[in-house]
Image (cartoon, rainbow, N blue to C red; front, top):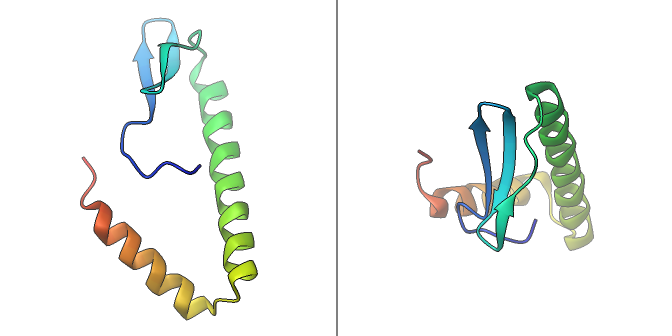
Length: 81
């Protein structure tokens, strides 16, 4: 969860399901059905949120400071495709 670069993780729909890959490692996972892919993504998002909250609390930021920092980061990333 430390990579800001777009495309580090990829999800590709194949005839056999969804396969996961990375620009850091050659190859991709064995395709899985959408229900499995969705569960994995939901788990990742929940963990990313929990880590972010811990970082904000550890830094001693107020909710307003955290929102402002998020806006700066998301704005720096530009629009998504």
